[in-house]
Length: 129
Image (cartoon, rainbow, N blue to C red; front, side, top):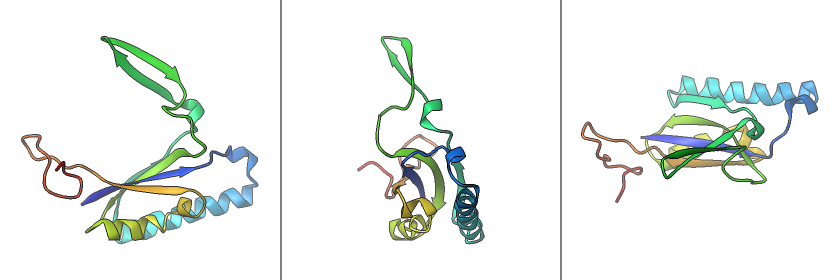
């Protein structure tokens, strides 16, 4: 089963963080990446640019509307994600707890909905009931 681990934290401009502190953050994420890849759990992941670079897109009455900024204003912003392969939710949670952002923010774990060749959800935690 695949799970997405969405990493939410208060946004901070890396240029305002002391280089040694920023280096520790990067080292912690690199260590998680290496450990989870070696275990065959980490399928992919990425860090996201700050929310100020976001563009929200909506289509209403056939017209595309764009708004600068994120979909919602919150104290914590989506800063990155991992796609994790785990046997079950408990295993996904154990891995999510190792993500450095879990110590200072929140990591949301959600099953990825899988589909068969006919476009129907397959049985699993991510399938519609």
